[in-house]
Amino acid sequence: DAGVIQSPRHEVTEMGQEVTLRCKPISGHNSLFWYRQTMMRGLELLIYFNNNVPIDDSGMPEDRFSAKMPNASFSTLKIQPSEPRDSAVYFCASSSAGGGNTDTQYFGPGTRLTVL
Amino acid sequence: AQSVTQLDSQVPVFEEAPVELRCNYSSSVSVYLFWYVQYPNQGLQLLLKYLSGSTLVKGINGFEAEFNKSQTSFHLRKPSVHISDTAEYFCAVSGPYNFNKFYFGSGTKLNVKP
Image 1 (cartoon, rainbow over the protein chains, first blue to last red):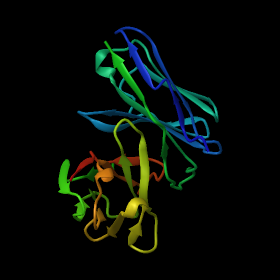
Image 2: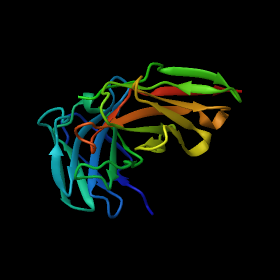
Image 3: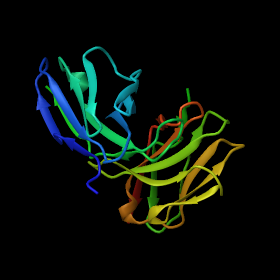
């Protein structure tokens, strides 16, 4: 099993540019999560989807952030325009949970974003 | 909302010594509990989880944790650590109202010294 796949692994961009992070969940998983990890704030849940539908986006910091899941095998997290304070490691995770159940979340390797 | 407290941000320990990493959570109602490990520049990997049944849970790499409902704790232990256990450890809780949503602690950095 390939696990959760994220791309790119590293992204360096300039303030004001658009950034798109990509995630392919584990096949068969129906829940997908986007997290942000920083030294100051630790691991924060940004948004999660169940069966491709956004369920909870209360962690999305502001309107500059948006996430989509057009199908069961692909999701994107977009930041536009990017700012230096968005610099962090962004993780995608997937699980087979849903409908009131819980299950292990499997994490991808992360995308390290640096906004100059 | 659920809150998870990892009391120690850093734990230094010598190789082959025992270690305990502490985790407390806020809700006393039914929850599910997890410990994850993060090695440098990697994603989080599951160490162990408690869903139901025996309160002592055994995980990978010789780690175990004990669920204590009365103290709302889920401390992680290992009787003898190795240099390779140097990593950051995260406690996570799901529930009681939304079991699909995990609440993570702030992490404990375990530094195993030779």
